[in-house]
Amino acid sequence: MKKIILAYSGGLDTSCCVAWLKDRGFDVVTYTADLGQGINFSQLSKKAKGCGVSKAYIQDLRSRFVHSFVFPAL
Image 1 (cartoon, rainbow, N blue to C red):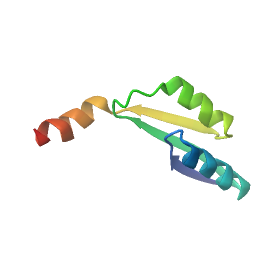
Image 2: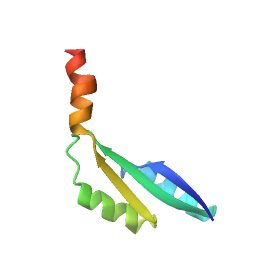
Image 3: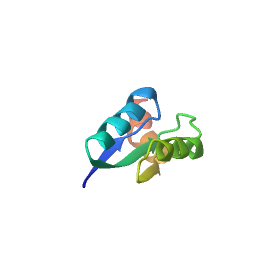
Image 4: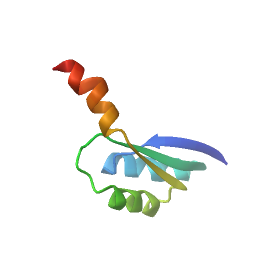
């Protein structure tokens, strides 16, 4: 079984992508970046696993995002 990583928002489109990829024989792993968007990431992880992913990664990138993109734009 081939493994694939999917940038996962938890919305209908990426949740449908998980099902579509699994139907085609892929082992789906999701990745979500926390940029401060105010999402309940515990709930998001449960939703991803409920869709059948083998692993759901969530990375806290808030500080890096602010220092690398927000501050330079000001």
